[in-house]
Image (spheres, rainbow, N blue to C red):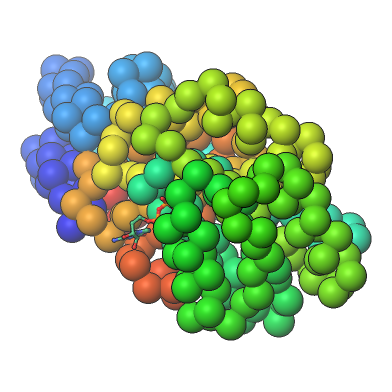
Length: 297
Ligand code: GDP
């Protein structure tokens, strides 16, 4: 289960304050030390942890919590609010274009769940907005990637534009967009190539596709199971492409929490969706407050 260790440790850290009419400075110091360790162990970025702990501590000291009624509850509330803030406070909706089509470019490392997420998103738009998306297969390096996208698309009854693997991805996108215009598709979802790690050539290609397509949304898919690596990946893609949002996948697995809690604070870019399973319906809007509650258990 996701966040299991983190939830338990945070609860333990704060449980010790329960029943105390007053919390001494040394009680608070001890609690903050345990919260700090819990976050570090969950693979949360070091600077994010430092800022978080400082913020909670300042608020706990400042608001007369130590003197007040039921200090344990007040500190739980402060931690809850600060976790929410660290993850961006509010849910951030998908960017939409004033005129059709809204163009969404999917980027990410191989295996992160980019193609699966492209399908999930297309289905969500179909179900919730009665949208008519077109998907473009722009990963020409692995023939299996196109087959996979076609299979995903068939399962949700969404058309795919593809020209096989012998055409330049930028040309594929150009022609795909022309087809979308002809067919009046309201969304275009471009599935781009992934690699095992970030490399210059891939980034240049993605930059070229971006320049041609002017996407309204560049959604970076990252695997929550990879913790700090997910954060480093997000930084790498964001530096080159200035992404507009992040999809955090595999939150149904036993991820520790580092990616969920660090990405927004490190990159400044919002997590917009979370993947919570392999089925096409397993994509949810990311709500920082709900995620904070889930982490606190
Ligand atoms: P891509 O290489 O980035 O396009 O990744 P894929 O879409 O092929 O996904 C890689 C694997 O991760 C597949 O087996 C997917 O079913 C799986 N996957 C994707 N998203 C999720 C998720 O949210 N939860 C789980 N459990 N598996 C996922």
